[in-house]
Image 1: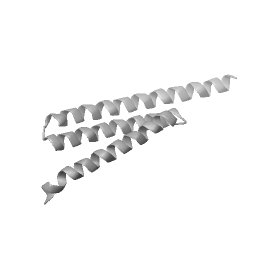
Image 2: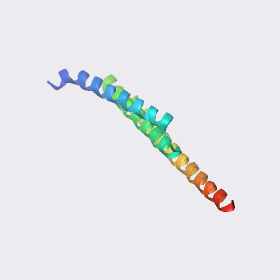
Image 3: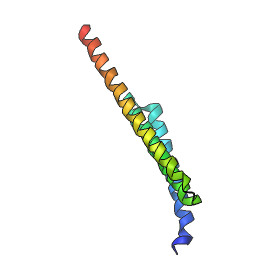
Image 4: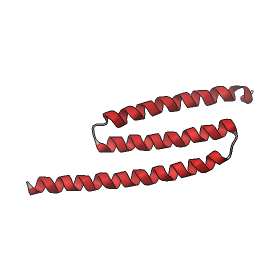
Length: 100
């Protein structure tokens, strides 16, 4: 019974990932602040991890698990780097306002 529903569930999950990716892409383009764009970029990274997980489930290839770990690590490090960049930029803006 479960084997009969499995392809449909994978298709539904893939469709939801696409919709979430489009929403994140819109937030990257329209985000009013840099922090909104960073959060949307992190969401895209998480969606990439989920897509690799779906690929691993649908194909049965265990190599996708290694890819998932690598993408998750790179996504975390990129988010931490962007957060530091935003924090430094916010401090510079505060310094510029005090100097004026």
